Length: 422
Image (cartoon, rainbow, N blue to C red; front, side):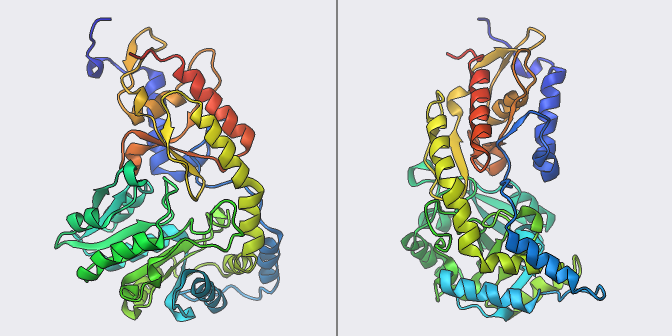
């Protein structure tokens, strides 16, 4: 086959359409969550589990008490803040009181408020890769500079003391550490966190944002077993801000209730002030639902992970292991598989115009999976690794119906079978 200049070949309308959808999905979660009719969405971070009855009842009861609509407290309802502080004291080893917690509209607002409060324009925010694909945008919107720290599969993509030490510069102000990790599902042990603490003790200018939004999602547990948290290490506890929400652990993304917790009064005040000038405060009816959910943690979280996620993780792993050239480390927590798809790079296919095209990277492959191909059903949405700061991978969620995941993998294989490799 003669060599071709792939860059000079005009893109087909179908390819441009598929690329456009992927770009929009990265910029707008609403587009990501509304895949084409009959398209399989394995990119979602919002599992379709039903809302627990106690949550609905609590929201309804609060609405029935409505007399007039006033502004909520900027830092959140005291009953919810106290319940969160108590939960984190019991399960994370934190020393929080109600006053240490600020309720936000989800973890996204918490992260934005925290970064905006801590990092001045030009300051660095350290991001171990792979990360949630919106981290860099959150940092940049707050006029700070994202600085990636590349991790490796040899230690399950975890940040090490050596990597952390080498990444810190005089401009570094914030480290965002996600435990359990999204997208890999890897979990830092307490010993691994202790090793990182030794480096953090040296660099007192660095504040740690401990992103723990998947910290209860350990398949096979009761729902109360939390991932180890940096907030439990007394030597640095004043410099740790825990960010969490009810979106992932409780499968209630649309509730939009999260929080930031900090022992430092000045930082809490800055976070609260930012909220006062943006959303002012979180809807009290939603907070009532969050409080009910927290009180039913074992029933909601434990029921979800044992009733659905355990079996789905097992079957998803079996299906993915059967796909040629896919490699992965089974996730410890959350509900994603992080798959090395680089074995398909360099493969070619013939498009609808009769032109050959090469799969150069994970972005090309994820676009190809969404492409309209004659004779095949609609495609599959995945999160590509480049968007997570680590090219060569896909993130696929198994928190979907088993039949949907199986059909998605089937469609992936159908499209891969059309590629010419070697």
